[in-house]
Length: 95
Image (tube, rainbow, N blue to C red; front, side):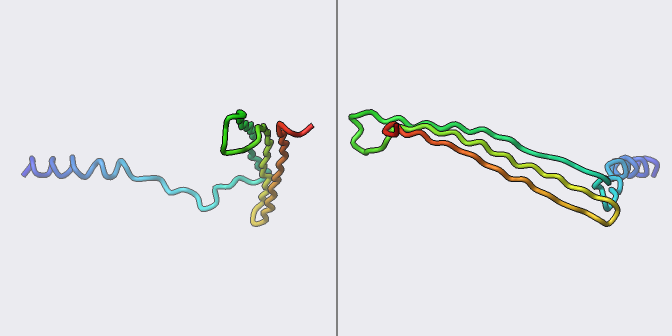
């Protein structure tokens, strides 16, 4: 009987240990929060004169910005998102 009780405790104890704590319902802090992403992308395509498929050699660059500004105070929240992109392309035939 003691062995059976010990075996039951050994199997049930890890279940109690792995229990998770209850997280608060509103985990967003009061005040301003900021998060963003800035990326730069460079592309190039090169074609020689023997290429029968056609095409023009070119290169391009793109700059992308995505940024979030969020404000929270009790039940009031204000969410802002700034999205900006800029790109340039240069073809071989352009002067």
